[in-house]
Image (tube, rainbow over the protein chains, first blue to last red):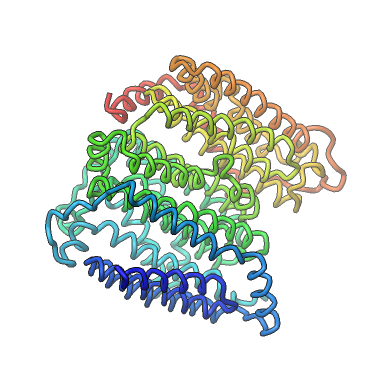
Length: 163
Length: 477
């Protein structure tokens, strides 16, 4: 219980840092950190398959995609970045407070729901789950990745100068 | 066979990007147009050759759980039709061959995503395909990389993300209750635990997310900016089908296949529908930008569709589906009209226009057809779908909402008459005396959509017989 609480607090801190940090690059690293902590939670909850995917895709592949996009953009100067961060701090100072209040509400509500995840009917292998049970989702994920990469290429790649 | 509707557009986009791009670029328009025409033919003609293909080898590799009913067929046909006219619009507006080619690729990905939404029988798969459609839509809105387009895409991303969070939370709760993500399993679990707080919360989260995706008031913040700032072809596609597939269709599917129509849910749907229909129409009345007026008009018309759905009856659902089809046709047509006018004049400001009907007769005539159909004037297609929705509301005992729907129609007529008078009638501005009609690639789809609007209206008995009978099956009647 104590460990769960520590991990959850770390998750919230990493998430807040991700949205409040001044640099896009740091934000994408923060996102990877959030995913890595989430992976720990998933392993802790015996969802090893989901954990492996979280680690490989969300903590691995997605930040790489983000960083490749960021490398194609014009970075802010140090002065602009500091100014941007200050204005964001002034606008969103209440964000940690909201997260805290929501957390308390959810903890109180969870006692009321008393829901328990039904036991899985089969302990199917990852291969079976992906290729037989969730084949359509797998195709969907491939299309999303293809679409995302294509979108980056279309929107961020410098277009040819037209004579 | 249905798996091909998802696989072929995606593989088409993939193959077009393999080596020999020069050849692929030349072929892309034709291949893409043929694909969309085939999709329409497969749905429209049950005896069409491709419908009999059931390749065993393919079925062994791809074990997708997909389903088709009357509602899915309407959607699949609309997707094919709107994608085809978008393709034609794109060929006129983008000059650069690379841009044209890239647009076609994104269009194929979007079509694959929407076909997946329509065919999925599992709530998580449905969510995955919603995201594919959303990703493709962001790219389409920001395609020209202009400031307004990027801003519109950013607003869409932000509100779409909120919808995603709500949806994922709803899916998690459905899974918690039923232990499955399949429509039928969730439906059975819901029947067994009817009054559960968790179930009501899951339904509320999911429906709220779909209100955002559908652009209903007061969740419409992204829609006018996204529609009006997107490139012409993207506006046609977004307004014609994307919002309906990603918002309205999914809402109907969730209600019909999972949640059912409780009295509370009906009340919420009817209120949101009526609110969108009236406020959307009033907002449209105050606009001076051609595309923004059409955007608010879309919000109003989606309100009508939700009013039909909110009755929870076969007649209401059939009216809603017919209005989805009609709205896909006449709103695509009107956005093409606005694109043609903007291309000719270089502005979308209605106050600077006037008398364009003499210079652009086809655009003017088809615009009148689209506007009158949208306002529900007989014998055009829009009249029948609105009439069915109003009859469904009245016969289900929601008489106040039926009266509101009639009032909304009067407001629709008011803003479209004002638009027609300001743009196509009256005295021609001397500045525009040399403007010419749009090119053939825009005129052809305009005429096609105009003929469909007129044809469906005149030959409605043929369409309606199939419609009403089929929708009995959708509701399990």
